[in-house]
Image 1 (cartoon, one colour):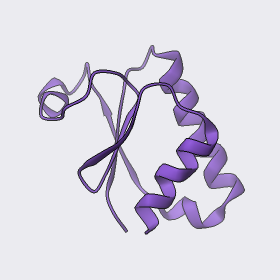
Image 2 (cartoon, rainbow, N blue to C red; image 1 turned 45 degrees about the horizontal axis):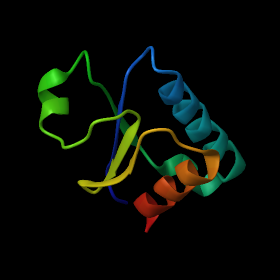
Image 3 (cartoon, rainbow, N blue to C red; image 1 turned 90 degrees about the vertical axis):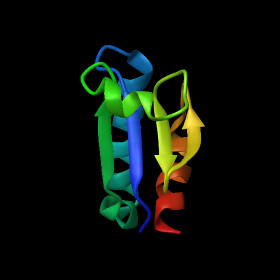
Length: 86
């Protein structure tokens, strides 16, 4: 399984939706429950965030490659999680 990082901000409404969509995808598709996501709150871990090239949150990286940046929909979250499986 490939490692997943999610960069987010606590007060970001799009980030809260992304986290909810992750939970919903895991509930709807049990195989996705095994995907572990390293959560990086960028204001609390600026050194980690600065090491990555992105502008908007939420941003997902799978195996070190940026796969999604900015506002996100449930089907896009599911696709990110499936990339980690493959």
